[in-house]
Length: 184
Image (cartoon, rainbow, N blue to C red; front, side):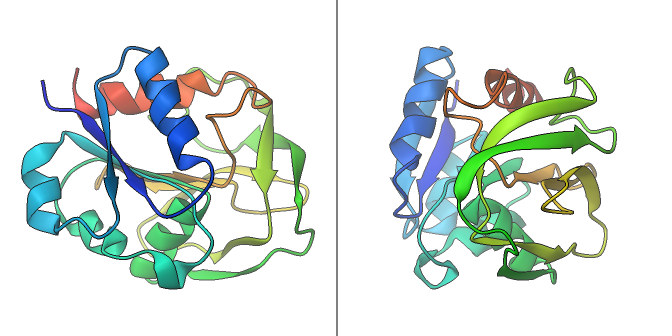
């Protein structure tokens, strides 16, 4: 079975994402964001765009959105999706990194099985200010109107928070849902 690729966007949490999937016994491999789209397309069944310092260092990550594969963006990965699809990303009003109460605001495959509210660990230095056309908001918080968004049609999803860290309530469920979306 083909793995899910974790795209390393030079962030400190990319290795945690890789390890989390491995611990969940999900076939996974990490690739640099300079990997050619053709190599990504033939080598995996889904893509996780990990975090990183800036959009300017995202390499080929935006091009992976056009491969027809399921995509999950985490933190910077969410911002890559938003900007590549015509949304707007800007500085968060609250910045920082810490715990956030998130309200699940819409039905989605990526957040299936979650209760109406969860507690997550997130960074809000930057956040989605305007959702791209064709995308829906799936979660929000008092400090951020777009904690999660996606397009069910395109199977492209993004979360502002870090499901790979232990501080996020039932973060494993995001990865299990993504594995199901990618086909087991």
